[in-house]
Image 1 (cartoon, rainbow, N blue to C red):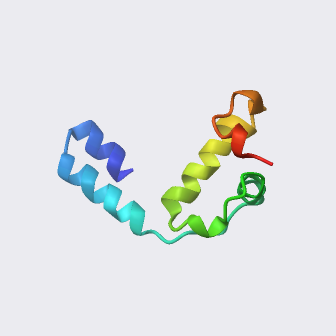
Image 2 (cartoon, one colour):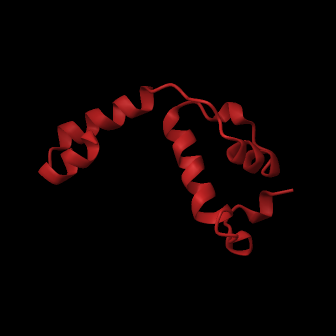
Amino acid sequence: FARAYGNLKQDHKLIDHAALLSQKIGRGAIPGIVRKMFKRLVISTATLENNNLLQGSIEYYRNWCNLNLCKLCPLREYAN
């Protein structure tokens, strides 16, 4: 929310501060969909160091895997 508000107000200091804070948020529980995706890509879930990376992985799943766009996936060549 703080980053969106900073964008609306064009407050670059608030945008940068929100980005730094979000990187410091610890990683939460890893959903099964992300575990399954990482297993297929032979990537350790330990690489998800913070909540930003976890949320990005969930969005990636929603935008590619959940829509069955496997043939168009940029990571397809790495999957087992």
